Image (cartoon, rainbow, N blue to C red):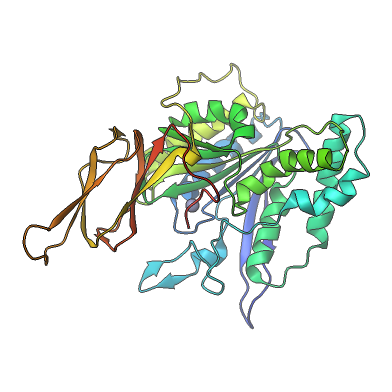
Length: 379
Ligand SMILES: [Zn+2]
């Protein structure tokens, strides 16, 4: 195992943050798997899972079982980790720019299109190697002017040539679920089984430039853009990436983190990154994948005290009451507003705050029928 420290751009006199990455296996060995945690810095279950996964990988490496390469970044956002307000962690948006730490990653397909269009040939493996080289060159040339962009660049430099990418997040209160692009679902179906995902949200493209989709989107978007240019060279989907939501922010416990780390380790065995005596047993899927465009975000049109009648994991039908919003100051009878499910499906996440403003978000249901378009991710 190698431990590497990467200094970020210093934004101010005397200020210097550092990103730490652990590297297991032989550099260049395949498959390369990249795992990072807590890009949204207040989402800590992944950091604890990374701690336990690191132990499993160290043991495996000492036993000579590492066949591929694994990069582990246990605390992917030192900028967000340092942000606090009113004694609370504020790790989702950068204070300076108000940008979400998991949006605005550069469009890698657009960045390399011009060079790729003149260098593609008949060999798909050679084309993959060429595109990875072009992306690496582009990232090396990129000179970020801000600390945030320097962090984005470093995370992409560590991950851009990975075959598999796991970005470990969590929701506020939630059951285990994951997001992925449709093009990546097949390689991650075993991971969803091993983790016991209660919802799987698939999108062609979510929009907004999140970390995971820039890495997997590179391949299918570049292939499509090349076809538009009249270049019909074979370019496989060389990276599959997913955002794993490890339940809720409060679910930071050794027993679940150990189980989750074991599940990810078994996935690494399944993917051939770690040698195993026998292929890991894959439990049945605990849910059916649903389109992200079918996920309903429940909102309350009125302010008040939010009281949940359903918990994350509940299977809901249209019309079921999910929560009540109570206005204890109302005159007459108009004191209780019921928030009802408008689609059928699993209530996979709910908010944690119990005071809600008008238009505020209550929770999310994984519906089976697409009805949304445009940018599909929330703020
Ligand atoms: Zn997140």
